[in-house]
Amino acid sequence: MWEIKIYNMELLGAIITLMGSLVLLIAAIGLIRMPDIYNRLQVGTKATTLGTIMSLFGLLLIMPDWSGKFILLILFIMMTNPVSSHVVARAAYFIKIPFTSRTVVNKLKPDGNVINVSVENQKEVITESLKH
Amino acid sequence: MKFKNWFLMFIIVFIVWILLNNSFQIDILIPGIIVAFLVSSLFCKRCNLFSEIILTPKAFVYTFIYLGVFFIELIKSNLDVARRVLTPSLPINPGIVEVKTTLKSKFGRMLLANSITLTPGTLTVEVIDDSFFIHWIDVKEDTVEAASKEIVKKFEKYLEVIYG
Image 1 (cartoon, one colour):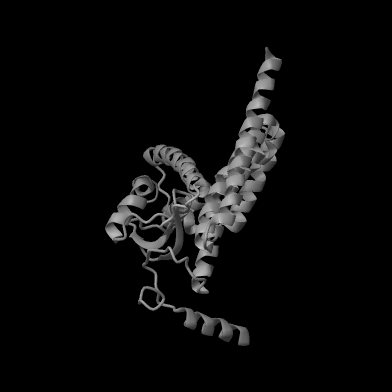
Image 2 (image 1 turned 120 degrees about the vertical axis):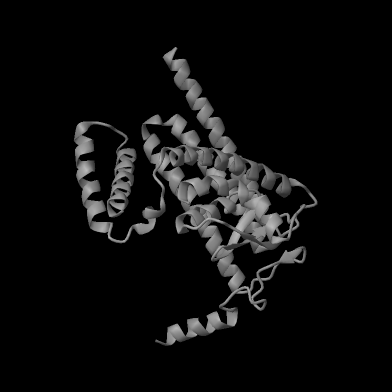
């Protein structure tokens, strides 16, 4: 009875890990298919977060002794993954990487008085800081 | 107020210690208490980030409801992204919209921005005071109020109770 239960846990963990890797595969396809950096980040962030969480959760079911470390890893990925993609998107916006032609609306224009520091000012700030 | 910051830091460090060691034996717990005490005493001079957290039973319950809502939205967003990626015509309609939040605390706004990034088709690009500028993969509403209702409200009602 006990052996059957352990075997089932391993099978379930393997299935969940496989599903996580499928999610990561979809993310990889999306990175190739999407037209610009912002849409690529959209696919990358969401799918890698769930894919990694599912892979780690499957490993947790296979290796229950290490569950604390896996939970820490899951929490760390949940906290850091959106922050990093936000920073990449923000940097891409401020160095004026162009949008795809299918973009319908943009409320955040550097010349529309929405941002206080324009891109040109930021370049000046950076060059000044490099001089010192 | 300062004791609360210190205590939360102590609890977080101690929980990390327990998770890393994965055991509740007394000879593991006692060094953990000593290390957590030292770390939280030495490095908690500037951790006033925690002072915005409201410690009531209701906030505790809402934290768990929020985590549940968050995971459901994460799975929904992945199904949505998978559908868009695998459809041959690539059905996207992207754009940057502005939304407003009513949250006051910095920590709550950070969590809201993270949650927005991980939910269906939205990515926080810039945060200026109470306006979030969000890249939306399928723009349905482009006015501030309608977009806020569509994107922000489902998380805001929980985060409001937890962080104020």
